[in-house]
Image (cartoon, rainbow, N blue to C red; front, side, top):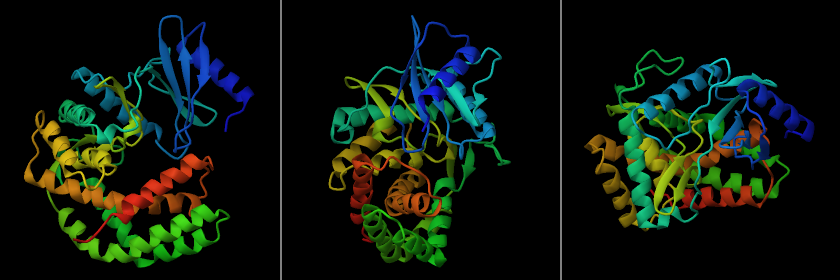
Amino acid sequence: MIDTLQIALTQYSCLAKYALRETVCERLNPGWSGAESWRITCPRVSYSLRDWPTEYPSAAVLTWQQAVLNHALARNFHLIPRIKQTVTGAGFFLHAGRLWELTEWIAGEPVGDLLSRPELIAAAFASVAEFHQAVADFALPFPCEDQPASRIGPPPGLMSRCQMLQSLLTGELEKLEIAAKQHHSREFREFAAAILAKVYQLGPLLLPGWLVAAKLFVRIFPCWRDLRPEHLLFDRNQVVGWLDYGSLRPDVAAADLSRLMTEMPTNRSDLRDLAIKSYETIRPLNAAELDLISIYVESSRLLSGANWIRWIAVEQREFPWNERLFDHWRQILRRQTELTTE
């Protein structure tokens, strides 16, 4: 975590990079990624200052992601952060070994019960379709890829999850289990045991269907890929902003649709139908795109807990060890427990 002196130095660096004056700096609660952020208030405008985690994104990836945002803004999608350029015209800068950026502050608030309120679901999924329409012709290849970002091909996110599950089923599960048992936290050990047991049970049964779906050829374009409820800002019943584009990269429509649907109650098919209908009023989905949604939801519910186990037990990443974290794990476990092979 950054101490008081570092905060002062960071604020000074920001002032120098952007020629801002008469600012008030307010530190915000960190997210799961370990990124730090501040609200920078000037006399007539406010900004969000953010440092990205050292692990990701790289400068090349961040440059690509900001190009996508600028492309969407040029296509009149205005819910995303507007990047403020430094005095040298750059979209970010390097400070203390990390990449930093300044974006215009987006007014609005997340809604805790978003996925149980039909009017908010309709607005949220319509905004997803509008974003997909805005970036559908973005062609700049993602770093380390030699294909245009917008193309026809097999679903990148699902192919990655197939590879992850195959790795888990051929030895990684045992390694994670051993590492988790040695952890000091009882809450974490219990969480890990339950998550890994479900992967042991359902992984071999679900993988064949995933591999078949991973061969579908569908439209690929830049996707947010982490559009969970706390990343959507509302003013009454209207979406007014999207937050945290750090996972943005080429994928299929299901990557964004499923991220929100994963957290919907499994017994509310009416809400899922409403979500799809609201999306399709703006961008119709073909049969393959529709089929992939349930696979993306299923794979997310099975594997998201394993990611946490790897981060903590193997990579030894640090997170705020508090009730908020434990509640997040309970939600992941609940969604995984609801999985069946029917």
